[in-house]
Length: 419
Image (cartoon, rainbow, N blue to C red; front, side, top):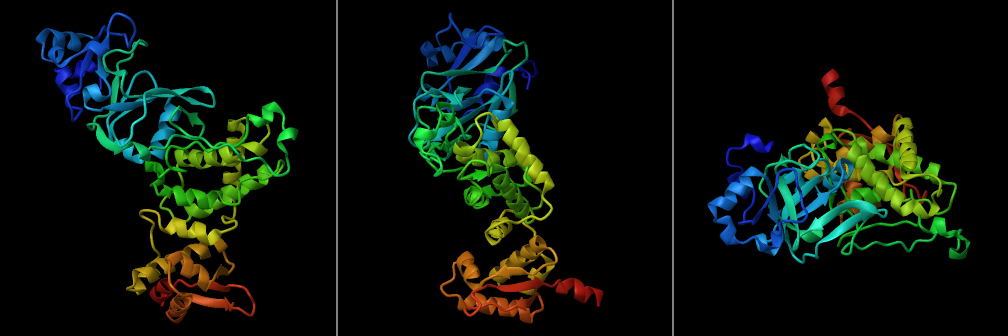
């Protein structure tokens, strides 16, 4: 949105907020500095026709915090940071979002306990700013770079619980807590150099240990906290010199998870998964190898995966079929019970991951996944699937062998059609 495209820019800006916000009149091409004290703007000014004329002729700033009904914003300095933040906080894609020369400002009314305004850094470098009381942000006019301020999302600012916000790994501020207590078991603190200690793992969080959800249109969403934990489990190196192996394991798990989704993970989602791995693995990473180099190694491994899977493949498949819009195989329609339909989808995906080989599935695993009281019920379910021709038991498991049964999934619908 260019300012010149809107006839009554002041009314337009005011319509983007549920509360009456105080607007600051700045000269065109100026985003802050001496000469204008936004803290002195009042309701009397907003009612003054001459003041509103000044607003329309130059840049318009919005006073933030309690003075304007509690409106706040997160100012993100660059486009990459903005994309990653929105991937971690999909709900905030549907609120007012503006842009100067780069990055964006995400506007909303924070619910709950709200911290003081402050700068945000990532790995010690400026990343953005949390703006509430004592701040103002330009929303319309001309940026000092010469480009017009833009409205990226013209949806009015929403109300949103502050404690649901997740910042990308490495982002720090006075109200963001980080954990960095892990020390690889093979290295004592005394053996670490100062440079190595600065690379100890961090998992930066805000009120919650991980992102509540990760979403991107390209990947169809569904990458939540539990899924990420499942993907990361067993892939974090515990000693140096095994990073490549663990990264390849992570790549295999991601590929396995994608088998149950309408589309692969988007670039933003891949970066989120890798960033969390990198933060936790930092104590075992080489100090002379940068984030981008490790990310390149991960994407190359991801591209080289021929057989998805890895350890805990059942849990990965389970997370995959529980993502939004996950398609079920035609055989699921043979059953009325939604739980049996989901079990069919799980077996279908496990067979896809196993290729021509049989897949393992234990009754107690089904009991755990479906939260059943006993393992007798999943035994009955698997027997039903065998009777209906969906599964063939290749090797029978049990307490004697101490192994899970192995199955082949049979496409009975396709067979019936062919007949």
